[in-house]
Image (cartoon, rainbow, N blue to C red):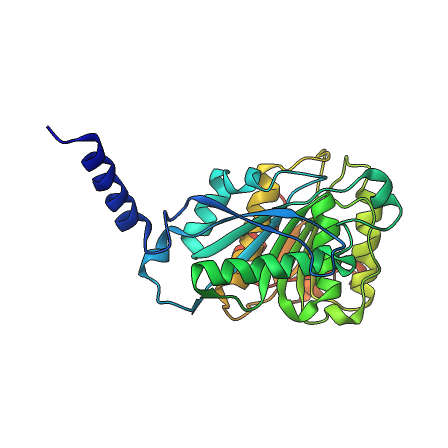
Length: 292
């Protein structure tokens, strides 16, 4: 009969082999970080390595997706969802999600984690440095998905450090910072449910981005309220997957009145009013975006 100690030793060895040299692949791990400025923190950042991590080389560059939940949300929520787990494994991306905390009064007063330039941005960069060190990887530009309060953070982080962001998805923020030309190299997907009280503010932000000719995509959902739906996740993942892959853009032109799309430069595309016209960067994004 195998002793309890020996069984535990064998189990530990198997977990090491299956999980790779840095621990169990796919397990949710945590780093806890305070802002270097002392303005924010300490904050728990939860992260998940893709299942393919055991085959990588030390200091290999990996893609990273920062998932920012709604108001004072628990970062573990996203990392335990099947859709994001599959995305992580299929795209070979590290998922990172913070558990920020603020008060409604701070948010309304223009302070707290909603505003990365005031401290939460430095906290996030410090967390990413810690994760890179623990897992022996490197990160280049990151992807961000944010919902509600997370959408505040997502677009605020991109405005604060556009050179660190490849693309972001901002779904349903209550109010928005003014977009600027600093985002001319940052792709974005801006979304809101048409039944959400945040719709008008979100649409106004997108309209201003269009005036600045920023590479932003708009998508609204009829009847949807302030909730993440399967359609929202599907659209977000198609958009993020395009920028995670680094594939060359194959642009299509979308009509945000009908959610139909056409080949760029075609007669149908040219007939769309400029304020209703957006550029979709791939066939996969266009198919996820079109009206069902």
